Image (tube, rainbow, N blue to C red; front, side):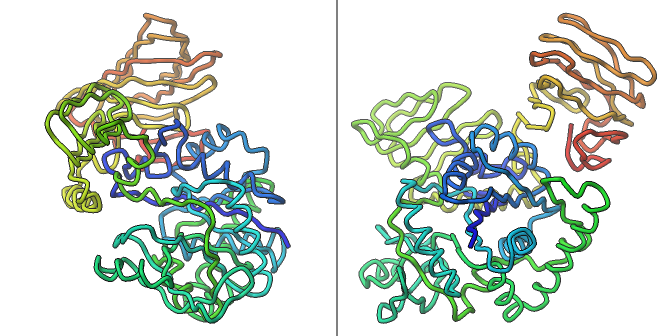
Amino acid sequence: MTVLPVILSGGSGSRLWPVSRALYPKPFLRLPDGRTLLRAAFERAGALAGAPGVLLVTNRDYAFQCQDEFAASGVERDLHTILEPAGRNTAPAIAVAAWFARERFGDHAILLAIAADHLIVPQDAFQSDVDAAAALAREGWIATFGIRPTYPEPGYGYIEIDRARPIGGGFATRKFKEKPAADLAARYILDGAHYWNAGIFCMRADLYLAELEIHQPALAAGAAAAWHAARERQESCDPAARSIELVPESFEALADISVDYAVIERSGRVAMVPASFEWSDIGSWRAVSELVAPDTDGNRFVGRAMALDTRNTFIQSAHRLTAAVGVEDLLIVDTEDALLVAHKSRAQDVKRITDRLRAENHEALKLHRTVHRPWGSFTVLEESAHHKIKRLSIKPGGCLSLQMHAQRSEHWVVVEGEARVTRDEQVIRLGRDQSTYIPAGARHRLENPGPEPLVVIEVQTGRYLGEDDIVRLEDRYGRLPEGKAVE
């Protein structure tokens, strides 16, 4: 039976703010070796023996960034993508993946559901444990993976096994405990029956859908309807497409619930394989810091950092020099527009900052100053109430949508490459040091027809400069007609 790796890429990583943002979430976090977590997940899935391809379930807004990461991974397998219109947690995501697997490979196809934002090494140990889990799945078990705890971590979920019931390469599970109190987590380390829940699941597609129907019948029916609605629309558009986009009206009606709560904690068919691989869910800046080798004072640095009389402190600073004097046990993360300083013991509480930002609808929760788009990226250099300056970087062949703005005008200056500009009925070419003006209300588009990146400085002026002042008239990337995804 086929084992299909399914990468679930939807976690917001609120404890990894200010690098992780709503529109640049945790899977795009770069590791010290330069790879993103998502790219590492693609490489891990693509290296599994006999995998017929890789299935990615992600939000439609991240589709093009995910494709770029897959291309960078060098994985020589087919990538299939299920695009969600909104996040509905892991139980619905795995349900539509199960429908995909059943349709493509048959009822007994085995899913290996892995998170895009975990770090797992080495590959040979992961392969061996997947083989053990797949053997359990073939016998009608939902196999999960347990990590032997090395310290009392109240931020993780725990699995209790029944040591009197060994099953194949694992054990039957007794119960699950989500984020226990610190004293209880400390007791779990001593009893030998509790493991960290790695959040990886291996099961037959038909068994998962059957268990979902038993324990969450409304969700099971809704997920089936959402899948069939998406397939019906795809067949009418492009039946050969590798991406399947879920219909908002049906998918957004599903319950927002994790696979743990929906099925794993309720089913009597769950077994756990003790993992021989090393695992981290990279769930906090403390976990990120542990990926970096310490100096003689226990300090760990990524980027441009300097320390004096400082101990056991992590500094990540990509854009400017960050210096620390006379401190210890701190986490310091500097980005273009936000700075985090936290004590290591409070790493989990960074989420409380993101909760406050969400309550205030603060831009620092959603976007970086540099924002990635299918055509390239833009960086906000300066802004005030009535002007904004951006640096646009357009890939060779990249093309912004044909669009218009009601309340702002734009001035474009080419600083690198060659631009093709559409302004109402006029099409012009601009080279370096040339510029043009786009008045409010004009239909316009910017393209890069050349083989090199195009760099444009854009100066916006007007009464209102919000990113939702955009109407898309045509878009080669299939994005929404109005400003949900900004240019």
